[in-house]
Image 1 (cartoon, rainbow, N blue to C red):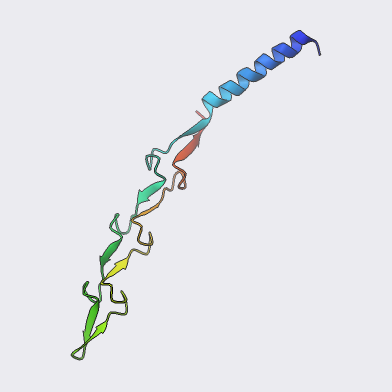
Image 2: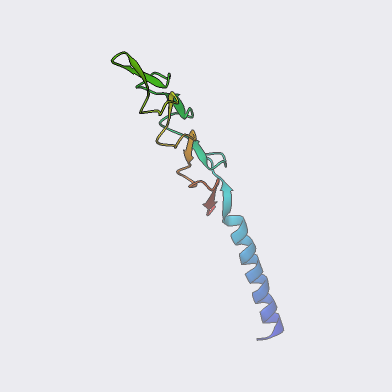
Length: 104
């Protein structure tokens, strides 16, 4: 291959690579704002809530005697099962990465 043909080929190849970087790339996810997380749809970000059985006291009364609540194990609260007590879930658009790949 002649030098001038190779040089032209190289210039075209470099230009194509440069165009691919400007056309394709990663952008901040518009759904989560780049955090990779969304507010939990079940607890709406408040992952701890009063236990329904003991009303938040941690104890239940049965036949006049107090017992430790078996649902919350005496803590008085339960954690959201959807987010495991974190208040947030992974973004469904970027799958927790915070960025999305675009072809624009």
